[in-house]
Length: 345
Image 1: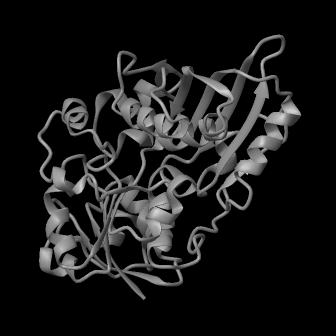
Image 2: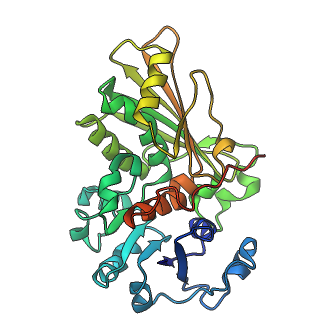
């Protein structure tokens, strides 16, 4: 069994890791930490796990964590980079669900996240854990930068077009929406039900932290810098990301051509479902699952191609993808523990 440690397990991604790992055939959670909840039973904080875990939250202990095979950081930005070097030296592998190792440009990272990086020497060793793009590198990785939720939906949506040079990389638009759980489990006025209910708004319009991460991914696919307009929105729902993506085709392709292109690109991918031309994927159809559902079409009478990409921000956008990476790192079936069907209604 893979011995698992979770640092910062009291948030939504921590809860999702526990839910997924509970049914994993080859992994067992040995330690879960929280400074604020040390001594509290996991089932007291998360009643839906009552009778499933007999663990209590504990103070972070580098010796205890270092004895694990893999340690997941479900923590705020800036936490993993302070502890990862020691854990790696002790032989543990590390999967960071925050942003500490996602950007390769140190100056860019420090500008966007407002703090000096604690271990810049590890940036070159970190593998960006989007398996559909970097599967082979993930297999041999010791340190995984688990992608953000918006970047996962946007990158998977644009990838087939950019990888084949079929669109103008200087004109890309990502109009993306997230459920409130994307902001984390915290008390904040703007996230109260009375504040977000029956409303819909854009935020961080002048610049969002995920923009450089998305740009980095798309530039790698295109083989050159890209021109990206990215605008996130907050939806009055708990889970889900919907990204409507726009690009200008540089070749003449029909809807059937585009759908076939996407199906060929993602052939054999367990967690990408390319829908028929004309379909409109719904966030509810992936809620609770590790799937990304995609549909692609051409705007009538123009050269604009529209891609719709939906994921559950807490699963494929966070904890599920982290477990998918763990499976690859340890030579397991990539889908182990990730077979949950989406919840409906």
